[in-house]
Length: 175
Image (cartoon, rainbow, N blue to C red; front, side, top):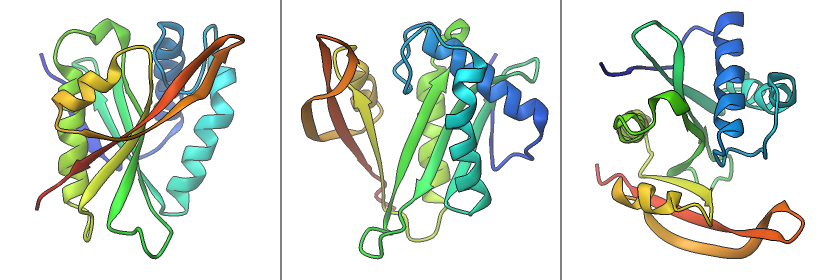
């Protein structure tokens, strides 16, 4: 089985709820996607609304992966730069694969789909993301072709006495 990816899916309540559930499940499994467990879908909603507003404004595009049941199993948000000197690259945010699908290669599939989506956006030459240090996810992104281009020590405070590096990674698309 593989995931089926779709860029800019039709957005409705079912998709919104699926993303919120995915985000909560990933967070509660220890995923570094902006929250520290425990969280509920209600905790997630305000952050999801920010992504939805950016989508409505045309600044962000949604990539989803659905499993064989049609359930949202993966997401990534591709966000265009608004700064006139940086419109040749975009940000990749909230990269998630459901914990039940970990270890099946779907993370790499998601990253490949995100790179294909970025290549399809006129003028985009690179994808940039940040990740939380201390959990090894930067090795995964490196295995997908991303290069570490910066690191801010202790920029992320997970809990009192538990600060993590903010790692900046870049994927040149090499059209």
